[in-house]
Image (cartoon, rainbow, N blue to C red; front, side, top):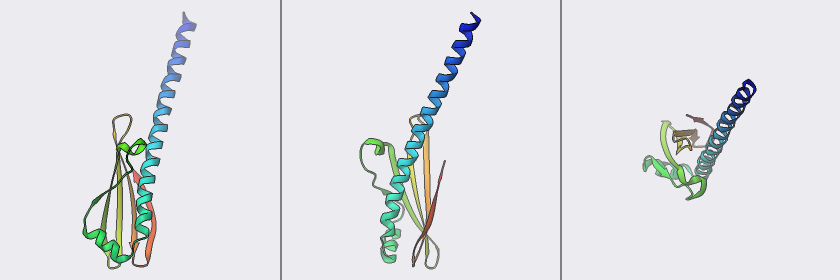
Length: 126
């Protein structure tokens, strides 16, 4: 009786650990997809001239097209460009998605673009 109780506790503990690890893997995959969407848009922006970037900025915050279907189906992404000072703009890309656990997730990528080109970028998650 005691041995079977210990065995049941051990197996149930292993199943809980397995469930949490699979959830973490799914969340990591989703973050990777969000990063791919944001980096694709950032590389597209990198090819724009200063005048093209100002035209893009004048349109205001915009939704970024995300490939349809597959892993991308639950994702949306927005872009916002603002002036920091003369000759310098800050570009913020934000990806939002619903996780498999039903919770909302967000990843943000922020970079600065100067008249001489795009600086390095970083992103944050919540």
